[in-house]
Image (cartoon, rainbow, N blue to C red; front, top):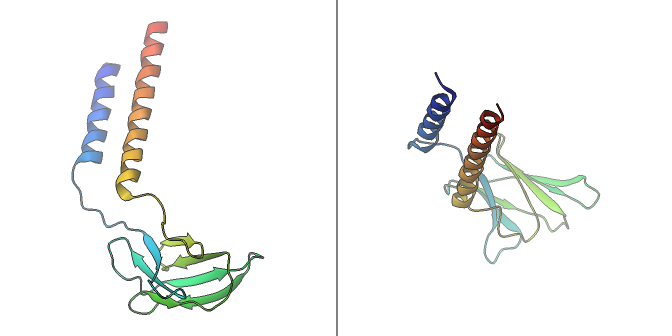
Amino acid sequence: MSKSLRFLLVIAILWAILLLPARSFAHRLIVQHLEGQENIVQVLYDDGTAASRATISLVGENGAVIWTGSADNNGNVKLPGYTYTKGVADDGLGHRIMFMPGEQNQGIPRWMAATIGVAFLLFVAALAKFVSQRKLVGR
């Protein structure tokens, strides 16, 4: 089998794997401050489901954990009045997010992350094609 045919076969397989519709259950944690209540945060998954198993730890200026609390059934956590530099939410299932006091936006939108990922894969494929073409010309 020629190199160009193998390359096209690999690209076709990757194309099929990456672009065919498939059901995905992956999601991320989101921590948001409830409007009008500065000392209450809600821990949710990005599909809107409450992360009722989540725990939140507040970290002080010295880097030590100064408080830890658990979410209720609605994902709400009442924070104490402590001054903290960052908070960490963890649901115990592998989802973990860091947040800062008063922070509203957490990360880039899903569509933008997907676009960046696809662009990166296309860049790697183009680079591999360029390198393989350059090796063929050098022979």
